[in-house]
Length: 326
Image (cartoon, rainbow, N blue to C red; front, side):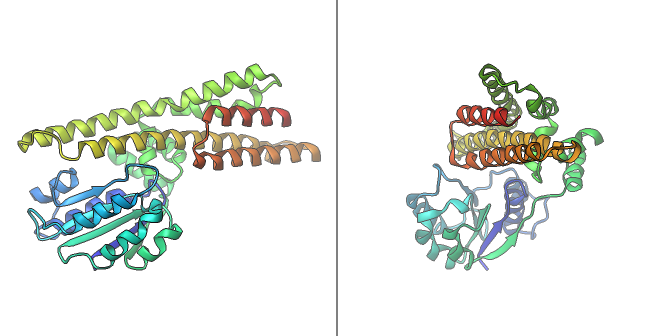
């Protein structure tokens, strides 16, 4: 079989699994993990393993045609080449341009499709692939991975609990001493709302400014990745780092995604603060209805994040509605 679909939510390990699987396919020893081929694939610098990243909000037809051209290439150093196609839940109108290539790639090409969800445009492509499903990781699995990275028991557990099943997010949080403070800030919002617009404006600005704190940790990781790629290119005698532009574009997407994830996590913490009141207070019926409505408002705001709204206006409007129900 020459086409595989790795499908599961963000942070469930699809990209890492695709890289490891690629190493096993490329390795002359079947995936030993020790040879130069394995090392190069795992380090992201093997010329016969190409991660194809989108450039815009969705995968374009021209990008799909580029994949078809890449699939026809002859491997440079191995018996196979592997194309890893990222974010294919966003394939949309480009799917038909890729169907034939995924259905019948050249004998020397293996295609691995990565997708967060089974979007309608992906259904036909999925039927041509061996499907491997990934699930959100449980807290103990994430904590174990963080401990293996060198985190303390306390830090690993705290980050794992806050990561919502995502190892990539947990690895950012464990290196960010401010995430507990940010959670506390979101939990304290109901007590701080006092019926004035000035407090709403101040809170919204503080919450969004705190959302950017995690980007500092992410940027450090990204700078280390680029430095490693540049060093590998220099060692190989390359005049410029192959795929550097694609790496930089992926980094920008990761920054946007991390910011959205952090805002979504904050809203989840805020919703939990209101839900906890439902379980602990002796409530009048009107107050219970008000708390339920507040949770619904928060959930609606979180869902709206997928539409790329103005974040400041979104948070301000939400806090104003919550203030009315306090």
